Image (cartoon, rainbow, N blue to C red; front, top):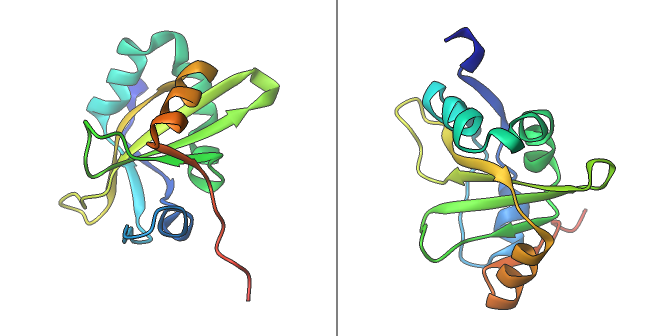
Length: 134
């Protein structure tokens, strides 16, 4: 049980989400990885577990892409290319606060370049826009 420790993995990039997707009003909140979700990533996505756990914070700090899949309303997909590992990590975050007022990880796994292209072509995924510096 200690292996799947629940913890805060960082803060959702609200400015990047709101700038990339007009009409979205994400708030600057911490993102919680629960025991159950931690265990799910380790078992359901075992081949991706190590790379996801190593780069999950980077997905929040500086996502390459931000998306919303139509089958999962209210869940933002933060996707980060990790060139040194030749991987693309997806961290899905539910934009509905949990009982503690944090957002929660809804899923975490690696995606293929083909999947990124399909999602972009479908309009579900966009390159991250940064808020202009003042």
